[in-house]
Amino acid sequence: VPIAVFVSGNGSNLQALLDVERADPSWPACIRLVVSDVPGCRALARAQAAGVEVFAARPADFPDKASFERAVLAKLRARQVEWLILAGYMRIIGPVLLSAYPNRILNIHPSLLPAFPGRHAVRDALAAGVAETGVTVHFVDEGIDTGPVIAQRRVPVRPGMTEEELLAAIHAVEHQLYPEVIRRLLTRHEKGEDAGGGLGIGQR
Ligand code: GRF
Image 1 (tube, rainbow, N blue to C red):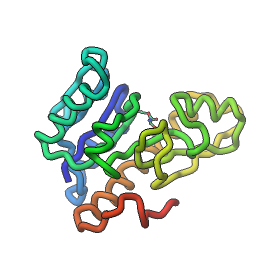
Image 2: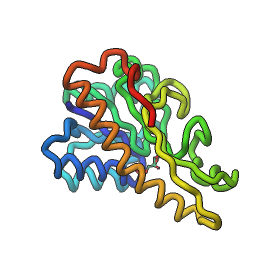
Image 3: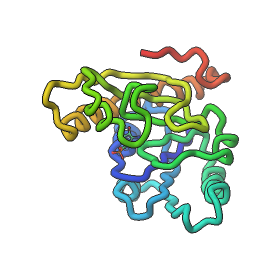
Image 4: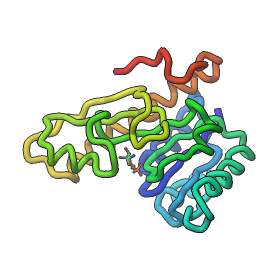
């Protein structure tokens, strides 16, 4: 199944997907394109090192969000991309991409949504003093971190843990969970069993 991964930063989740694609012949996804709104970000270097094609453009160089997304969409269509995988993409997906990929856009977020949406989920969880936080994979809708949840995994917060330590623990879980969920969904997609998007996909 041809996919595109959307990135804005470090790209450790992209790396996890590149690694499983290289190592595992039963992996159902093929990363056809990596899309970034931040030219020069580390994630793009990871894609290039793996020989994956990239499209990087600054949305500010376009008249509006819709024209930026139309440029992205043209690249996606040219590569027959069927699913969009957001991995540290720090921009809200607009109507152009949402309507082109209904129930085919995933995001990973570093909290147990609906707790701690937004950019500072890990810091916010620490500040709130919760005993556990976690990772959520969800379908993307027009909101910020609001679409239907597909899978969640807990991460305990130990007393005195620093933000750096908690981030590392969360990343380790993300790098397991995202490939697992993508494998499950795209295997169903390959078999033609995924009509209806999120319906029937259990939480864990
Ligand atoms: C991850 O924590 C993800 O949950 C959030 O952004 C971060 C991206 O990290 N959406 P990386 O760029 O994949 O290393």
